[in-house]
Image 1 (cartoon, rainbow, N blue to C red):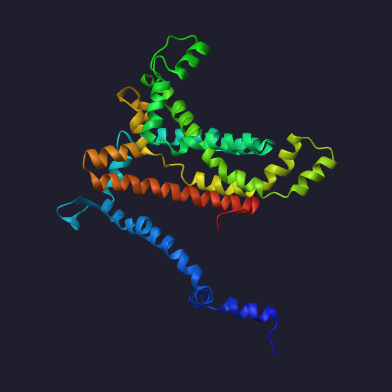
Image 2: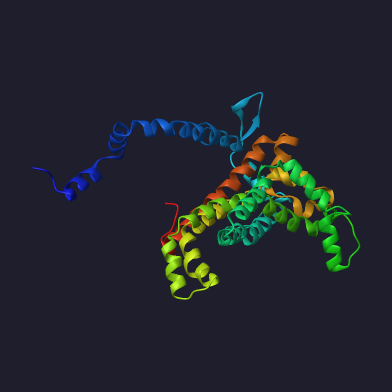
Length: 318
């Protein structure tokens, strides 16, 4: 006599995780073989390097190795928190990331919705191709173009001077212009590529919903508000949580290519500070402590954002 589905489910649920995993591997061996390269990638490039975080607790000397170096405990963390550059790097990192969140995060969503409204297929594909291209251009080239556009005779400088009436000069010689220009450059480079996932989510919406809205007399704006945005809201929320989890992360490469001593006050962030201290001054333990501190804040922000999202709208990473 066969067991009832409820009894079979309760028995399967009572099995320990290793038993269930072993059963799944036996049932679907090819799927687990396919995932092995991905698992190996994360182990080698993401989890194994975490071992190096113990350097932050030592006065690490490469010739001695980690465990033969002097143990200093939390001294490196204390030195960072009391460092005169701590508040400047924290402020700049947070301010730039907030601007990226406020202006950079909605831009791909708006662009994907506008692109979805295009009825001309050829024009849509051409627009996608043009906007994807900056993502594949080297950061060195992108920063070079930005420096050229923001020079004394650059396009951006000319536009700003025509609006404000000020005398033309290199914008990157003024610290107040660095953060807006950096945010503008990042949006220009990535908004087309970031819109791909939103465009994919839009293509999965049921066309019957739009047909019903047409019958009810809804215009395009109302269909976007009541159908499009609610339909892709889970995707938006998940990506927003991930973005908040990277609020303290800011790439050092493009900033180093752009900044100069005249704009350090607004351009110096945690990642550039770690680069200077760790690689240029050879203070490996101190730089590791700064990076570890940065990662812990990101982890706390990610957990907080995920918890709030799960309680508010039942959409979360886990």
